[in-house]
Image (tube, rainbow, N blue to C red; front, side, top):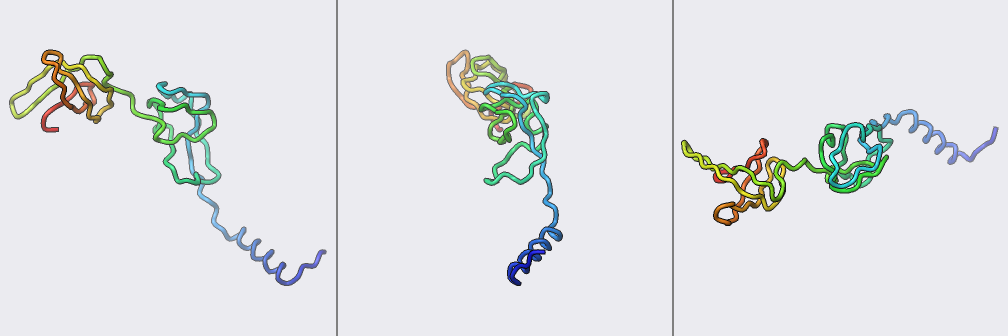
Length: 155
């Protein structure tokens, strides 16, 4: 048996104790792509895989932790296989597309006014977008609703 100096022996024993008594690191879950996903492509569950992280990301960035975080969303950037997916690399699908006419509603009490307008920006539910009135040509802002229509006025 090899003999060590008392100081080295102390550090060896200390390291062994730390390894035995250290709490096991909680394994975190994350989602990675199983194939290349291109910008503008809708993400489907068959293109994803859940993995356990050995250690958390160093920079503390927000990453997709569960399939539900990215399933049905649209890629903003190219997602590579086996790489963590930052949450800012995906977005909700657009309900309103630029140039496709939509119904715009203004409601105040019993008064409801609806017009057709052309969106100048694409948007998801809750986004404020710029629109052009098809009749007058004036531009205005409105909020995209979950049903794909737009609301103006007291938003």
